[in-house]
Amino acid sequence: MKVMGDYAITFGSAGTAFAAGDVIAESFRDTEDNFNGAYGAVCAGLVLGIRSGSLSFGIGAGAAAAAA
Image (cartoon, rainbow, N blue to C red):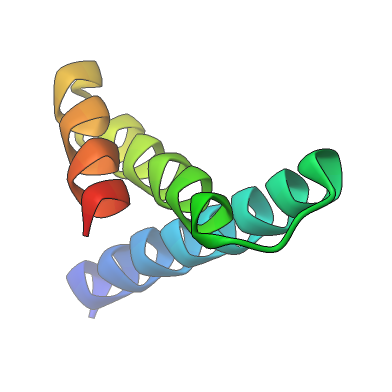
């Protein structure tokens, strides 16, 4: 049960970071386009990197998610 809770917290944190990054980028840039989602994806990737303890993994995950 503890492992499932850890995954749920990680997934929820990444989703929250994505949504926050998307909305904040839209607010600052005052446009609604695909780049806002890319900024949100970078934020979500960085959360995964923080969780895994590897900055390079976080940067790679964020870049991969932003490119998708």
